[in-house]
Image: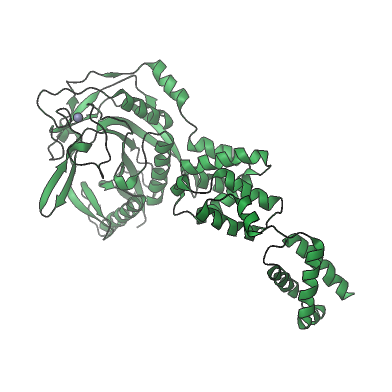
Length: 481
Ligand SMILES: [Zn+2]
């Protein structure tokens, strides 16, 4: 039977605040800071310690809610989610349950069938737990992360393939980075994805039992884990079995999901309103101020780039990474004074510059500034150098950080456009290859390209290809007469 996957995502994203959600402890990089140095009675759950809400965390959460087209609730409630785990010293996590910060949003993603709208069910604020590591048969716990502000974003089950899930995740991560609320460093665990998967007979609208794959920390794991689970459940139904509702882990080595525990239901957590915190009441004027301060988001940027003359594909490639979009914008602005087209900048950026970067985010440390890239393109446009010389100059710019004009001067790379010099070079090539000339005259027209290559080589690759071509055409056709 053919099955249709039904997928919803839950995303946990740490918020980029200085201090924790309910106390004044500093938020530190959990991969480098000494363990348990940034803790206090509140975030380690000591009796009698009282939480206080971090206003900056609320502001960042509202930014996300607005960017995801949600309704922001002027009153929301913090709730206790009760469960025991060694990384949760209070025995409960402060979260939001019945009245979350924001609901009913959406985000459009690109799919091969076109734009698709994915509904966002809710966005709520909670606190992160501590971090357990298992070393030599012992379990160690670090509470530095305990109480770090965390945003949970939950979609409706609108995704229909593992690829769509990844497209959503990529876009959401880009938005969080554009908003400045999260670094997007997935290897540090600051964004974690959870994929809720079920399958049903294609064409049906039932909702079958779903499983939840926890802690998918990379797009690759999200893709592979979700795809594996779709296959696994389809195979179970094919043999007449039933899928158990459970929480799964994903093993990156084997590429398989494995059972962690039977699924808890909401009532297992005994949610109740947090008695130590008042309702979170937001002033509508403050929400409007935040709305007005939102930066240009990926969709708007993409549209603006398309209006500059870029293809939809190039525009999409440029917006994924905010640093790349910013680089492009700076280059375009500088290029205006030199009459360099945005299209031409996009071409150089997405092909030649990207080819020299380890990944797109490396553009921030790139020794070639937007201005330098435009200066290089200008040298090609005004025919000081040809394209292949320009590529060699770009290599040199990468290693030395020198300006393109300087490299061209120092190495004498200026293109030769002088017709007399080129004419002389052509004469020598034809003289040295009488056999080829004869074949050409006998009708082997393709040799014109070979002559072109020989002339370019004899001039060290620096000749103006247009001048060679026109002069060569002229000479060859005069020989034919
Ligand atoms: Zn603390």
